[in-house]
Image (tube, rainbow, N blue to C red; front, side, top):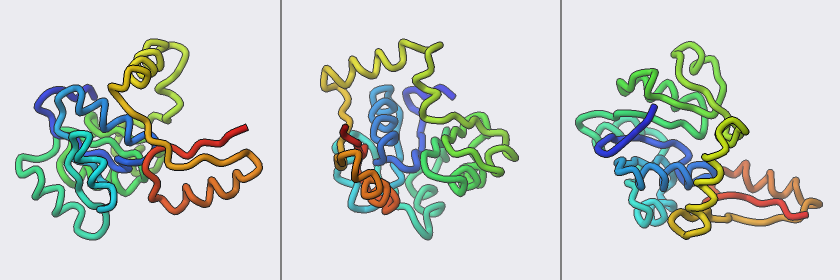
Length: 172
């Protein structure tokens, strides 16, 4: 999948640690981004050029309402229910990507890639380009919270609440 200008792409987990970067990179490409997130995240998404579609009951209907001509692609950064939703909305399997390995993803034949695979050594330009964008301020990486290593359990507890904006960082 290589979304570009004019494409409409839904992103689940749009304001999480990976989602915040994905949203900004897509907007920079001229993509219309539908960020699936909580209502409390709407301000951040709007400020970064994305439209907010609140997750929860009725999500499919809200996505249809936001994109009467349909979605061109779907990036799932949260869970397997979104892969199935993307297919139900008519997104072709080759235009659905997920970082969550699941039976639904295997069954539908969608691309499954872990977040760590993006920074693989065989693609060194990706982390370098991202670092340049971050250093220049063209892209931001929100930090939701920081925790010392001896409070790693607290960091995981906050992560499990699923309402962070950006990354949770562990400090040595």
